[in-house]
Image 1 (cartoon, rainbow, N blue to C red):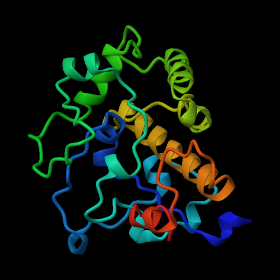
Image 2: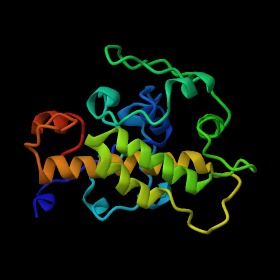
Image 3: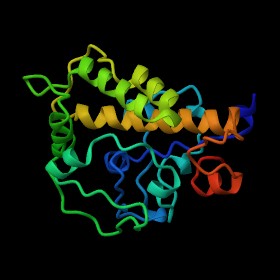
Length: 216
């Protein structure tokens, strides 16, 4: 298989995923030489058949790469919801900010975004039925990403039946999962299966993909 000849990099960094999904990215404070040890995919709630092919140094965002410009995914929330929750959306012709934003309460942003998008129940828990309908609409609005979004929905928008630990942030876990699978499926389909597709949403030249740490 073509996929066996190429290793795909995960491009999943927990602290940046929510910002990536909204079209915003903030630079991590650590440097390449002082990174924390990479976490296993299972620790992030992410499972993928090609996980063993991912080089460990690609488990975090590659240095000096603007993820928003390199591999953007569709904006998940409306501008109105982002404004209500106090999340700034950068414009496409702007550089991603390097200054870290003030520390916020854990899970606050994710809860706000889901609540304002009517994705929580009366007890402020994730309403998975509403979430799946929301993702169906999102997929319909973005035909270049429809297959990837629907695959992500199958993996991320169904409760596992286990009681969640209070320290875990379910909204953030869901969107880490969504972003990871959308990137995976899009890269696999357009790069390994249909690299010459004119609707390719990301750069198709191997050297550009390597710069994004999508191919190794």
